[in-house]
Image 1 (cartoon, chains in turn green, orange):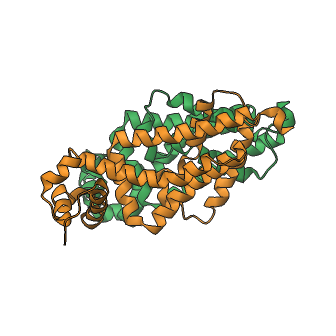
Image 2 (cartoon, helix red, strand yellow):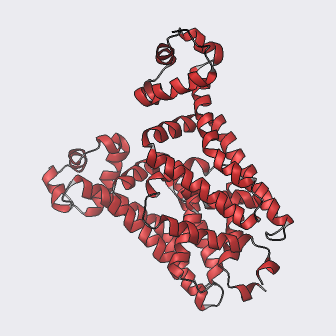
Image 3 (tube, chains in turn yellow, green):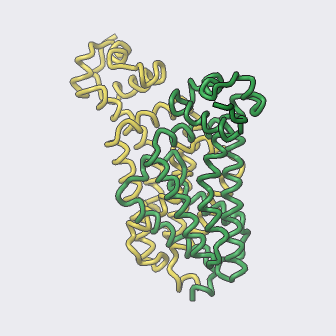
Length: 198
Length: 198
């Protein structure tokens, strides 16, 4: 078989398999090189260190998870519906991932927790997206005109229980969707421009 | 020295010391008995099992932490101020405990996480207290008349980041108090009876 040129995607795919097989504590670059039938310096040509490679694996996973959120962000719908659907997609995406691929989910959240840089980027991204929706709502006269970024942060804080991996074990509670909606109703009222309500 | 009769409090004090010294994984009833200069069956006369003893230690810690919350609950102040002060005391109490006694805090949260019964009681207690304040607010015409228990639960969900031990590392962020207040402002508006706002 002719050797294919080694792409970053091939390395990341192999890294994912190796992580799943040996766990984040034991998996190493040599295992990945072996699985790809190359020597490990070849891997280091693409990624300087194991830490950088793990970061790239987690970033790809987070990017994949964010794709549906980006779609909602760009839909031509009103800001209140958009915010609800975006938060719902954030929660349900994480929950689905945790339920459908529990081993991968555990590996990824462990790796993410170890990389403050990746986590910081992820959170910054979430705040930016929420701020965009709040700003749209201010322009539409739907949301209050307070500092949109602070409002966005407060909304994300409020929904911590519904997307932070520390609460993964609560996501299969029978009342969790009801609780999500009860919180949403209160928050929506809290950020809605007053004269819009009357 | 004359032997004092062995009280539950003496056992719990000793258990706390032993837990602090050996950690929750290694601490055992024999260590406690040795520290109290009694045989371990004497301890079992008061607590059926190590698990029950650990539960009692955690319960006492939680009760102590709840004392300031109960005081606020019984103060003759209006419901919105009461709710703010109660949530603030919940957050700041946990934060203070985590900062001032980090080893004990880590031990207690580990033990609490292992005892679904103790955790369930603690959460039930928090929900009951919040519900009382919401009901007071409904009676005063300050808060909306929706089901108070559901509102209480939503408020507690919203503040998860500010009292759940999973987020202990975020409690020293320089902006955490500002974020607490931003979230409070939105939630207060969200639960305030509408004609009260105008």
